[in-house]
Image (cartoon, rainbow, N blue to C red; front, top):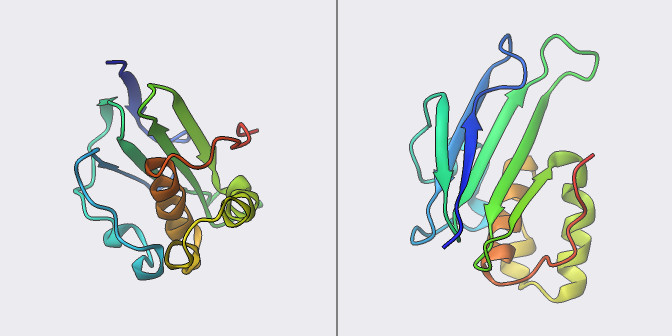
Length: 138
């Protein structure tokens, strides 16, 4: 079984940051029920290292308070059942949703808006074996 060590820390220490892991056996909510990080059913992680196993999803968010592009950046890191590491950022979420719609993802998973809901949608699809053509983040 292949695992990956990931660092739980913001890219910029001046920014607000959060991270949560949903383990392979834990259920994910429907994206339409997710409005923010509090809606992901897991505890917030402390900074440090975390081990991800197949089926695990790491959700991260970081504020961009000191940059011109204010708001938040989001990342989803997922380990597939085959042991591949998939990492996507919020810049890719719209394109991935279009891919999932073309691949026939159930309508109940396509509902819901916002970046955190998009991460949950993509994690659901990866668990279902979809998203085989996710672009690499820039």
